[in-house]
Amino acid sequence: METNQNFIKTAVYIVGAGPGDPDLLTVKAQKLLSHADVILFADSLVPEQILNLCRPDAEIIPTANQTLEEIVALMVERVRSHKSIVRLHSGDPSLYSAVHEQMQMLSEANIPFEVVPGISAFQAAAAKLKVELTIPGLVQTIILTRISGRTEVPSTEELASLAAHQASLCLYLSARHVENAQAKLLEHYPDETPVAICFRLGWPDEKIWVVPLKQMAECTQQENLIRTTLYVITPALLPKTGRSHLYNPEYNHLFRSDSKAIEE
Image (cartoon, rainbow, N blue to C red; front, side, top):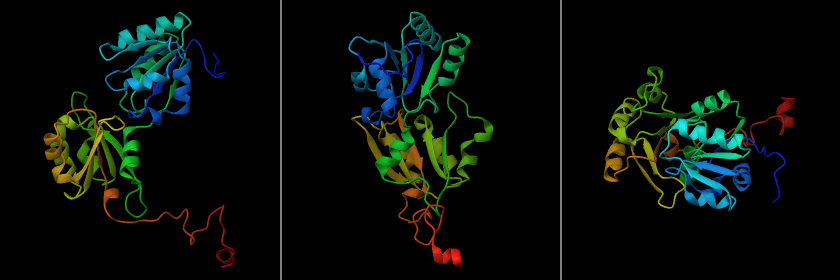
């Protein structure tokens, strides 16, 4: 079997699988999956089709029913047995993936690891909606957050205070608390602000609804959405236009100068 010269045999690779569509895996993620001896994957959040990229003889270990201690113990044992490990997470490991504590425990066990980013749900949502979340003259900030639930959000990041910016706000892990979330958002966003309710992005049963903010909770409850749902609240979904300076013929920069403007 051809090997990847950058592939370290005795190591853990924490890999983002993206929102669900196997075609959205990075090239590096595909290479790692095709070479790894062992794949530990979050089977409740990562589609099994992604495992088709793995070696036929790879050891596949689902982890939805395991604790962090059990998962890390497995990774440590396999690495010490000179196996290469892919720990496959949904989305991007930097967002709501419980990776921080895994990295801490691997470091304490002197196990080398590398993190490979993946596409996050908010990026997949923007692509599906065919919108740019930062439109000149309208919105230039993206906020990624969640509302407090079993995991508390720090008081300095309370949803109503973030909503005061009226930015493109991407709300994760909040479907079970949607009425509370809607109330806090309505403190600052107009009630007609478009909200994209994105369910299981990238999966075969993906669904997206675009509704006014005032109908966000009603739609969620009618569709019985309680998990794997992302809300994108943004003025970028309004029928308005804006234009970046970058490709504007009246704007000059390092790679496109205007001799007349320079003379003036």
